[in-house]
Image 1 (spheres, rainbow, N blue to C red):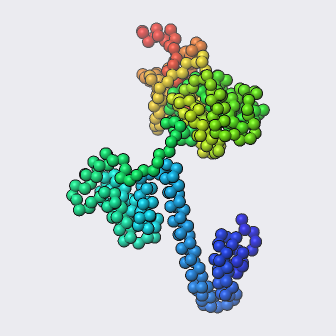
Image 2: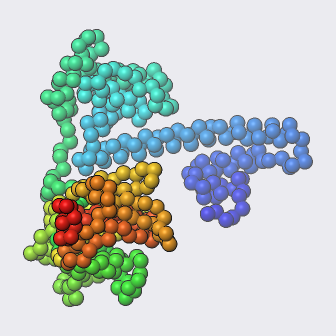
Image 3: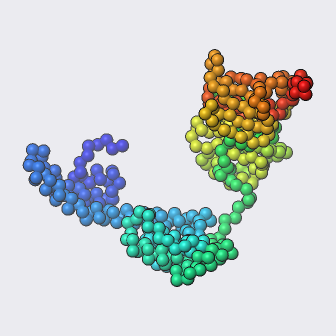
Length: 438
């Protein structure tokens, strides 16, 4: 924020606003040559003075516009070239650089050249993309599109050109030499590309779950009620003590239940050392569900050592804001269960109708009925016939209540999912079997 008073006749004011020394001096000179007239001067004279100053600054503004456009061109071409060097570019990026090097096209024109080349390359018909805004003349953009269409193998004079190119596109991977592929240590997706947690994957026993947290997620161990202590949120769940929790520190990876880790320092380590530490922390364990709660540089390091991670049925990571990361963690926590519990697997079919949210799993349907008689929201579990799902017991023999109350709307979906999986894995009581037989 600039706090000093604005003096347009002073070049330092324009320097502080991002202008180059030459442009700042020229703008300040124009303001000194044509300063504003006092407010009591005639309006016609003040308007004339403004027009004189604008005329004096027109060459400067034209030069600034040319410089900004040149910087935009340079930045766009540099980014495209860097993407190809890192092996992340596409065939269209190759066509952009070829159009620049071979024909000297500017950025807006070379993109139309690449559009024409790609259309011919994949078997599309010839069609000008005229709806894209651009400062380049329409004639030059169309000429570049025609040139790119021809370079890509298109022939506008051939009646069967589109059909021929469509068949060739199936056989040919590219009409140009692709950049050298980037060698990766594994064929699995990197942790940074994993999806966010959801209630779609089936539940997993805590003994086969892995969570990788940052040191910031476990720093408030002394505060049991800290809502941002991810490690505390995990350990507060019943049966979560069987899970494997790995914490990333500046000195490497260590299990949360290891009080005296070896080789952990406050100095950042290399990727090779971090991979060895992660392999040591996960040695002798099997997993079906992995959650990564790392961000920034810690997540980039985990991408480098991704080969040390197990390849599991479910691999997810938290993302976005801190609040959403905590929400993702709670969704992941809801899918865990202890070894003495029975939880049904399968996909829950969700529907949101006029009467509220309801889900279905097997023969059971859980509905959000509405407001409870006292407080909260009433959830009801029904069978396929529409009757209350009474007479079912959990693995420990305790009966399951077909109706229960949820305190807030934010917990309705998770509560319905938990109830459906509990009922689908329940055991009918003997009295219920006799009634059904009758």
